[in-house]
Image (cartoon, rainbow, N blue to C red; front, side, top):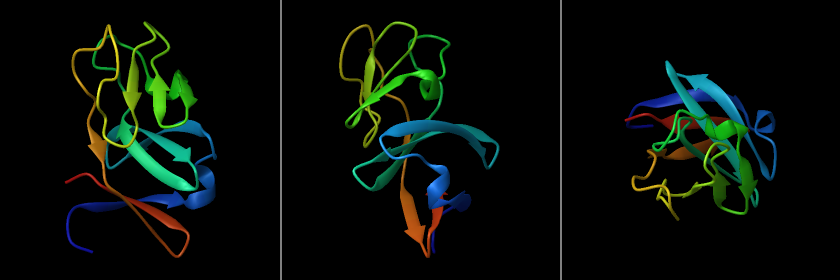
Length: 104
């Protein structure tokens, strides 16, 4: 695999239709299980000092627990006020039941 791919762990540590916070390669990430896929973003909201893994996941949107701003977990894009800046999203690969994230 090219890039800076880091092993996250087994696919089953990421719950379906939910979010989990993990430290991977020295970064705190939020990992989301949505429709059988896995997505990853930085875990800290760009608007306030809140961990996204403590938020509410609905479909492909994570709602920050502090001010209810929403991010698209696929791209990290800010979806509504009060957010003005997206969160960094990271590519994911799953091979033989193991999840890898490219911290590139």
